[in-house]
Image (cartoon, rainbow, N blue to C red; front, side, top):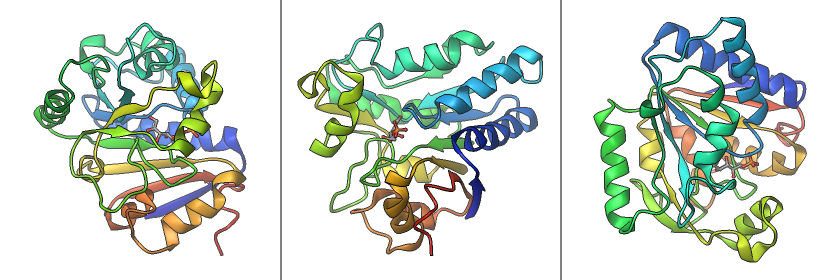
Length: 242
Ligand code: F6R
């Protein structure tokens, strides 16, 4: 595992964007695993800026997203489909047909999980998986639990996650209660993982994830077992590392 300490959010965003850019430049038809949330927003803005300058070409890039709320239509401005278009897809030359997210309004959740897992397999797996981390250590929507999930699954969101995400909705009642997420197994099958973390409020959890015991109670701790993980975190997020 390589840990890169960034000065602040902006520095973290640029460092992470550099790593993704290097992936796109060295393998133009790579499969990027993408994440949403406030952590990668600045990184996406940086990628868009470099694309506009002519430094990046997404024409052959394929993408799969980590997760999507269940029951949310694509045109809902809180859907992850909407987020990805707003922050990246609508501003670069990626072919929309090459971008994939779980279908939030699929009729049969079990079938949707299998379809999505097969979609990832059919693309040859993920070359570089981007991750953020929740305050409770979740990655994707894999919440703390008793075992690591193996495949894409449909999960009940924990109260703490609903609390954390309610800032994007009118009230906590409006936050969806379920989501589709790649499983821990799906994430671990990515050839390379890039974890971005920002802010002192995640410092204790990040220290547990990187240096504590590997346990499904801290889902991000599983990354200690992956052989190619890059962590880009700001000083505040790394402040509890002794
Ligand atoms: C988003 C995702 C989540 C977030 C995490 C952190 O696709 O999978 O695991 O990465 O909840 O969210 P932010 O970045 O908003 O703090």
